[in-house]
Image 1 (tube, helix red, strand yellow):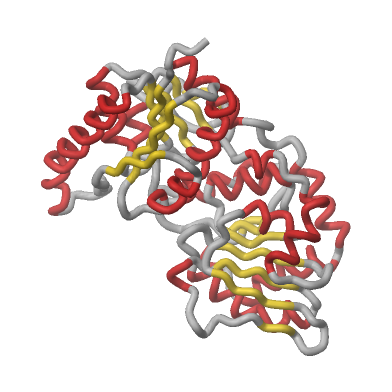
Image 2 (spheres, rainbow, N blue to C red):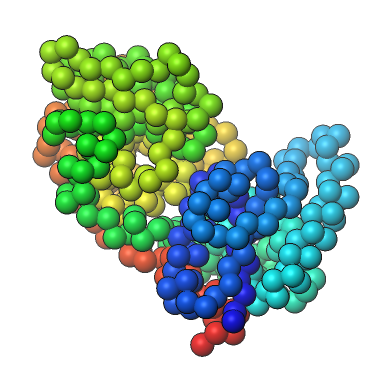
Length: 365
């Protein structure tokens, strides 16, 4: 039996491709042993066990981008995490490691290097993170989601997405998805989501635009992020149009939200960019203005193809949201044109391709 260790966590940007790759590994090698390594506090603590994966935890080791007092503690903390990661590799007899970046991945990469276990990395963003930059210097394969990602030896495979996404037929799933999400009629539906953690700017703009959107007969599914959903958020039904505003903290099955929606407003994290392009859902992207600028870069290929809209975070408010969204949801031809330009822009099944690469690294032919 081949044993594969998957490392990644913190946000859905890391856990979603990990789970998608695990799905395909199970299909290609039914007797494979899969072990996921994450942290006790990240999103992985919930979604990895829910996906039927064995989760082992090690402490996160954030790497400060600037000289701070915390930098002094990094070597000792990293050494401790590497030791724990090495213990996991030994315990499961790892034949290969596949990592998806984030704080938890670097200790696993370094442990694999110490144990001479082959490493495959997958970088989700157009601008790579520090853990994957380091691992790219010794990894057996460096896989990337975007064709121009600046990593040594990068191989463009695309972004692994779950079969529920890659095989989604939005048209046939639309009616049932809308009903399950709380919408009782076939009106235009706007999906708003700031990602797994939510986004204050997007939430505020949506609150400001809500009344007018509902007055135009547009349903709204608003994914606020778990920490942003309060008792003040309630379902609202417009007295004249019947359009509904449905606020939720999180959506476990995003394919359901994608099927229900006609248009999305959201961040341009790599997972959102690739998943929506895969299913053919047009998006008004509002890149996270922090970090290393990867979110704005992630959507470049869609904007260049006129297959999406980008609004800087600082420019987003209620009026700007209405200006971008209303013409698309009230003039079907414009939305149809965006959908048509999305077709074929991303690889069809990156998860299967990456799974084959991992199995090859583990010596499975």
